[in-house]
Amino acid sequence: MIVQNQIQQRLAEAIRQSGMTQTEIAAKVGIKQPTVGQYLSGRSMPALDTFANLCAVLDVDPAYILCLQDNV
Image (cartoon, rainbow, N blue to C red):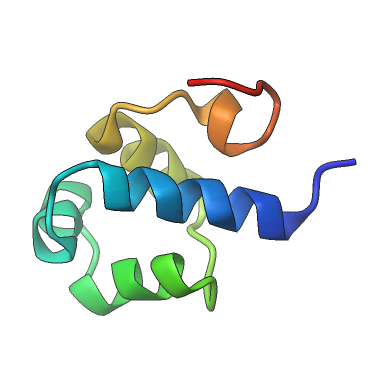
C-alpha cells in the first residue's frame, strides 16, 4: 500500500537531487519559496497542477514520486 509519507520522501529527494535552489524551483513552478520548503519538510503536499509542474521542472517521472514504480 502506498502511503503519503513515502510520496513526501520521494518528492523531497527529487527536490534535493535537482541541483536547484528552493528559490529557483519556486520561480520555475510559479510558487513561493517557503512552499518548496514545506514540501521538503513534509508539512505540505502540492496541489495536483503544482505537482505536475514540479515533476516537469525536476525532470522526474510522476509515477516514481507517487510510488507506482520503484526506480527513476
